[in-house]
Amino acid sequence: MTTSARVHNFCAGPCTLPVSVLEEVRDELLDFDGTGMSIVEASHRADAYDAVHMGALADFRDLAAVPDDFTVLFLQGGASLQFGQVPMNLLADGETAGYVDTGAWGGKALSDARLVADVYEAWSGADGDFTRMPGADEILVRDGSRFIHVTSNETIGGIRLPDFPTLSVPLVADMSSDFLSRPIDWDRFDLVYGGAQKNLGPAGLAIVVVRTSLLGRSGRDLVSYLDYRTHASADSMANTPPMFPIYVMGKVLTWMKTSGGLGEFERRSNERAGLVYGAIDGSGGWYRSPVDEASRSHMNIVFRLPDDDLEKRFVAEAAAAGMVNLKGHRSVGGIRASVYNAMPVESVETLVDFMADFRSTNS
Ligand SMILES: Cc1ncc(COP(=O)(O)O)c(C=O)c1O
Image (tube, rainbow, N blue to C red):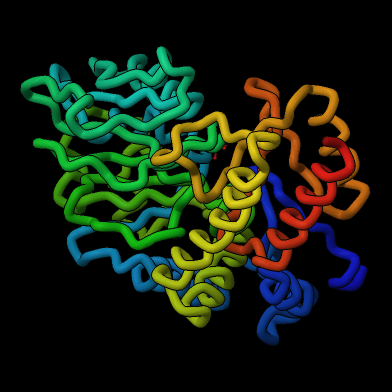
């Protein structure tokens, strides 16, 4: 397949990766760096892999400007495992934390945390059908709370926190679907986590960035894999790490650094989102965004057409024109265009042109 045969992939995750990264991976697959084998066949204790692994840890730190008093962990179990692992590691018996329920993912984080700790709902968007994020003054911070958990971007509902709330306690954030799409103000956080498979690489890898002083603070006896200290003390190589996703993510991080860093990726995400929301807002109500304007996601843009039938045709005709995975999540319907870090602006322009043509043919 040549690169020109590639589709415009608007998948919510796993999702499109930079072509230059895929080409490098292809070129190295039979012989990585003169080793005579691919990186996925190497020992994770080999020098070749060690360089890849330590390089990815260093590049993540550098790109995200992670301060020295935070530890970066590469883990398995997806972001989902963090729904339980975070409270197990950060909350001692009898301590509490608040969880902001902003939709499918915020809700899962809360319900899993409840299984392992005494946490509470700090705000719920259920009344408004999860179409907006809360303001800081709406978030309940109970006395003695260790942290407030937020989901920076709800991948299914298509809403994001435009700014992180300033509260009297630190934040813990699931950043899975907008990880490294904008600079992070680390002072506000005790811990940040996310799966790699949207903005950073293939599935199979979760990244946790935790304030080092909090390691072991729960005082709980945990299964060793679930204790962050196990991974922190071994540079995330206590057991066999997810080598392939780390290797590919390392290349994505290099690509992001050489492309201009997080400021540039924030600019690109504003540009992509501006194009699609512009097409929605300029359609005289034919395309409709169901979410609050201030909470609009820049990564997962959800919109509706006048009826279900038109939505089905939109998805089918877009796919025939090379734009795939535009169907909204089955729980909410409609259309969802996911435009992560590696989505070229040209693909978004193609979508916007298609939206204009489809509307003029069908209205
Ligand atoms: C915001 C958010 N959090 C958590 C998850 C779960 O991630 P994983 O599949 O890596 O467990 C997802 C997956 O799409 C997500 O979008």
